[in-house]
Image 1: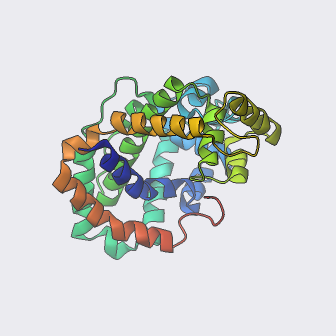
Image 2 (image 1 turned 45 degrees about the vertical axis):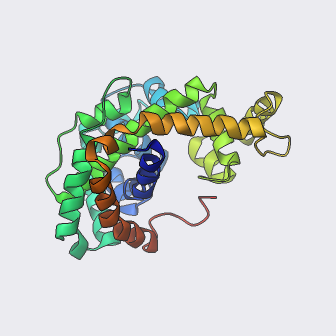
Length: 282
């Protein structure tokens, strides 16, 4: 599989995973077990498969978040709800969010069942070496309902890719904050206000990182990427795609195309249903 095609495939499917971070049903399920809405619920639900880890482990694996923000909520979250409880609540919320956004007719369809099996086959091509966040999620038991199998498989693929992306960023000499600042400067992904708010970086910290990147010749003083900066970001993305090709090699080109075909209308329904808040993405 061409890594570029694999990368485009992963990005086209990612909304079906990422919607879980914005769906009110997920937050409601997490707050019902005592977790505070917002950042505590997010850190606890995503980190829960790793067990009762501390803030340092979560900051290391999530990478682009301000460690002081992470440590404000972890490990305090585990005194409110244990990891297994948080994981169960997350999947209850995902099930409800899928039903609202996609419709019960879609969830019960043979197309979703087929997509779930294809995505699960792809996920079997992920490897654990050097992939701590993926490995923790891979240790979870598979759900039984097809729509949750689909979500779980896409989550495994996403975390596997994310672990590889962290390795590529480290190899490229970008800290977590520098990675976030330079990515926003590409004009893709989160806006500056959304990135600062969700990742916990103060404007002053953001500005200092932008200044450091400018001193290295990677950003302009106006906040854009230089040619060297664009080259570095491109090399990071190529490395990420090369490290993430395993699931799609396992699935093969024809079945990968079929999975995209099956998921395209699901992604369209989710987006049309308001799965993501306005103004958060550039």
